[in-house]
Length: 159
Image (cartoon, rainbow, N blue to C red; front, top):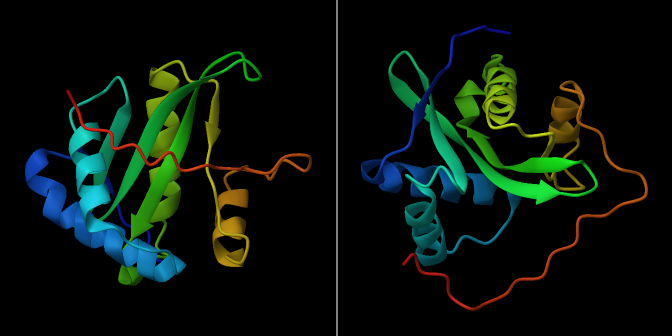
């Protein structure tokens, strides 16, 4: 394992092209569909909106090699503000170098700074490597719960 120091830089509107590329690669890796228009709109609506969350580029030696996305919520069960680690992506050549663990630590610190009481994430059921990775950071499946989602197709455009 190579331990490099990761830098976390808030994403700017000029980074949208790079973020779209990273998101496309993440979806290809996960076998998930990629909708460029929807993703572009979502990125534009989140960048610069700290009330919604944040996007950070992950860099090594001045080169962006991935990104992470945190979004804020609120949970009665957890007693206050919670967050969702919506996406964490590193280019293939940078995985297994300790950068992912640094990204998790960074996300946790951002959450603590925002008064977040619980951090959630989702992992594909067939992605054992990711489950092990997140387990090492003390994320655990909740035996009696499944994350369930329903897409509400009404377009959300920032006002």
